[in-house]
Length: 261
Image 1 (cartoon, one colour):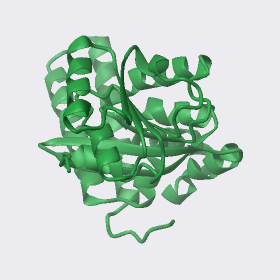
Image 2: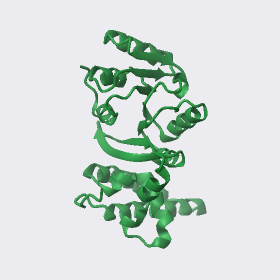
Image 3: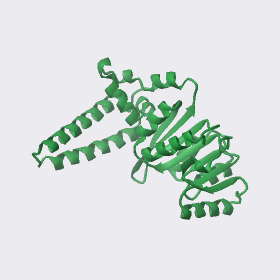
Image 4: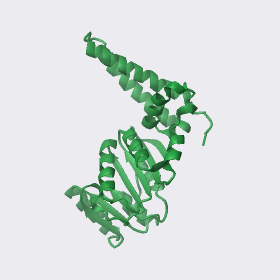
């Protein structure tokens, strides 16, 4: 059986067993091949826009003897999918903004009809993905953060839910951060950015990711210190405030905090 990277294995583990899965931006079709080989998915669709990866995916499915159950298709985003063909859609390895563009285009075209589960791994811009899910009736049921080869990745699993508005209102309620109710909107924004499940069940990896982000921001502030222009001073103040807010959130979520779920 194909061996996956830690990142791809984390995605695979969140696909509900028995789900017909469409992997969008499949590259070499590593995930679809693994899902079918392991018996987790009875069939899969591997979608890829660019010719090189599309050919590589076709070769991978054929080499594994799975061409009959893995359909490799070339096209843009969810355009490769027909309504009702998949139970789960996985998208990984791209920015959150692009990912939401793909999801939205697919939604408007009816390509998400029949899809009940999304497993998403944005490289950056996770906030955009979380906001899209909330806006369109998806409930974030699970998220995890991992480190691999010096990079941090977040994997999000969401399900389509008729009660998503109620579930999401509770999920993004920042009361557990012990902040004043008058500042609720501010801290809710940080839940979208840092992850509501991740903050409720904090891990050392989560803290490592955001300590690294603080370090980046501090270096930017240090570089700006030599400029006396009003714009530079304003931007420096913004970055300092961002650093302070990240530190406040992390202080509210120590890694030894008992799980609230």
